[in-house]
Image (cartoon, rainbow, N blue to C red):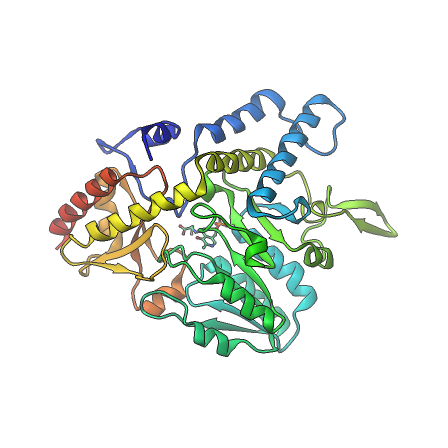
Length: 402
Ligand code: C6P
């Protein structure tokens, strides 16, 4: 990747604590290219309006752009527009399915399976559903490398299993799970599968038909779009069978005190005025990454991951947490017994942004018997020079803190 790509991300070109910013917190949120920033700016400068309800020019334009974004997302993941629901993000996508699908189809004695390394967003909504329904949450264990133990997953599956929900890529360790196999095994016992795509969509091509997942959720802000917007994909027949998540405007066909009829997909799950500029920004982001090419992005990030893995191990006492064979460009690490937060503070003094802590994966940290890690996560605008500067800063910080 070259300077012309970095030039499209204005935020990267700034000085933090006297040093050029090195942004390695992409798993938390990605930076935005001009194409996305301008799409949001254009909306407010040129055609700010509510959608789907105005007969006037601005409303028509805003509706067209918003629906074009839905089409871009649908094409991107190989779904139909009816299966693309705009939500606030991955968290809302999971809560929507846990509530709308779960309330209708989960009963006492049923089982829901997640893995030991899920983000809290992919644990807590299922716990809440289990509590409400008298169902049981079962957990796929992981090995020390941070991979799910597939044989143990197979043992958990039974006719009681109704939902399996798993991340495609772990946010804390970067492990890429064998989701296609997870899905096909779950289908053999009649369970539906939710794929948490929060960390996958920024890095790889995701084809819902090829995966045959029943639901997929992801967040716009991790995929170079604005915050507060995300996608729930669901197979049409499942979405049709579910009740709406929220009631309000837009999700109805007709309302009377005798009763209400619900709107068609995808509007049935989109009550109220949506995050219009967010949706438009997501369309712009999807178009942007497709212009670069996800294959090219994935190949470059693999190169960065190999480089950072090799270089970080040059730091005395550095231990990589999460050594799965199949990994994305996320690297968690510890140095001797230095507290991750202290390392994060010293790196920040050098203009380097990493994330420290449990990464919203406390059960994973319990399993690994650690409090947390330092996490450096990469995007296609990061460079090997930034990795070199980070290694230098880590060596310096380790010396100060040892
Ligand atoms: N992970 C991280 O720094 P929301 O907040 O809804 O956009 O995404 C939640 C979420 C769900 N699943 C996975 C795998 C995730 O990585 C995240 C968000 C961020 O790792 C913030 S905690």
